[in-house]
Amino acid sequence: MRTLLLSALFVSACANAGGSTQLAAPVKAGQAEAIFAGGCFWCMESDFEKLPGVIEAESGYTGGKIEGPTYEMVGAHMTHHLEGVRVVYDPSKVSYQELVHYFFRHVDPTQTDGQFCDRGEQYTTAVFVKDDAERKTALAEKKLAQETLGKTVVTPVRDAAPFWLAEDYHQDYYKKNPGHYLRYRTGCRRDATVRALWGEAKSSH
Image: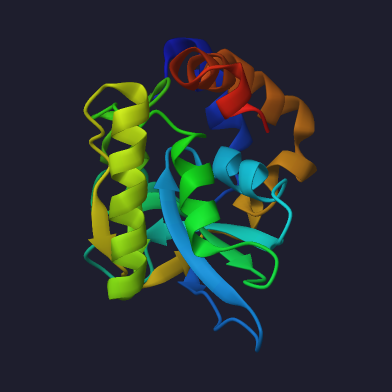
């Protein structure tokens, strides 16, 4: 659940977030995709779109039980979906291993009940893999993250599931509503927590 400090801003920002959702389109030739859940998808989208080799990141819902989940349904814990990002990338410029490494260092993989100020199943972390090669890479990066932190990393590596694009209002939210986005991100202490956990050099973005 969002903190009381941020709830008024969040409700206002999402008042028009309704609408239908659809499956993400297949990637184009020469592109690849990777799917992660790392708490607030606005923030994960912003983080990944700063990484060279990433073509775009899309906000959405994945890992749940029903087709066409909406923001309201996911927030009400009706579907068991997580807020996620689909990262579309150029594998000639950035590898899947680099994406997973980057992901772990932009979340708190030791949190079991959400991320930062956000609590609830939809804000928990996960790496979604489509084949054995991705699974091997993700598990190796999870092990490395745990060794680096010296703490238990709870982020699961899960089988890929349908990725439902979130409502248009959520896509590129950090660009469309930069003032509210920055107030939310700062108030949630996302960057401060990541820096404290991973160290300044490892958390830079």
